[in-house]
Length: 337
Ligand code: PBG
Image (cartoon, rainbow, N blue to C red; front, top):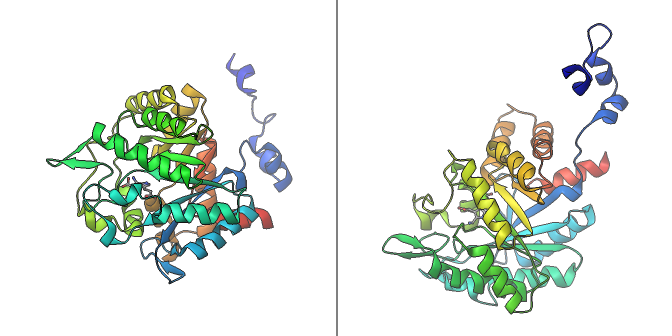
């Protein structure tokens, strides 16, 4: 039984190593592959004349001016990367308790989207919906008596989604983990004539220790000041709960779903893909990138090999694509063979 199912044989007739012997044979039996089409490139933008500024906790990654961002977008497009995700580092003077700047149609992210879409209309542009780049307390929603309130936050999030869609954003990506946000955003987008705008929901998003460098990059770390997001992001102990989150987002109208972080949560990626068969993405988050990069900079790991191996792991786990800060360099390498 087992034998026929798995094509098992007995040594020495069956030698598993025969198919590993030559490069052509290894390529022939490869079950998964990476292509530029698998990547979503997250990019950081700032309102500054400095074209690009390094982010110390994300070595090799920069905050860009809008002009530099448009160049980066062009590079991504040339390489066949389908989508870029734009994250704003908001000027601290524009942050307030209500995250008002998030709904300003001329905010940094909306100006960036307009600039990218006018230069590269065929490139997909994705934007987060969440208040953390805009609030002076660093939370993804509105704080009332020290608690992030759900339903009142939805009002702001839906307005944020609509201004971003008005600016030309193709994919709205709620990363806030409020209950009911996907349904509320879908209704708001449709009501504003944006029925073609897609929703890629951060459905299973965990309260992870791996977001630190991202919070440095967008400048929300000092605002959050050591606080955490455990009352809205998921407990890393849970897996069944992730299935319920994904199921709700699908029911509310998500077109695509995401698991975040990535490498520590590949079991969730596999369960989501098997159970729902949805277009499923994983976010190789800032802390994952920094761990591998830091080790490589110390000479402890071979960066070129470890980054490709990590990305292939997402495909093997069932992901249709990966958000990765390494998208451009890996796509370049795939192109040159
Ligand atoms: C905002 C958001 C975060 C990330 C993506 N969108 C940070 C957070 O939830 O605190 C993290 C991405 C990364 O670490 O690379 N809600």
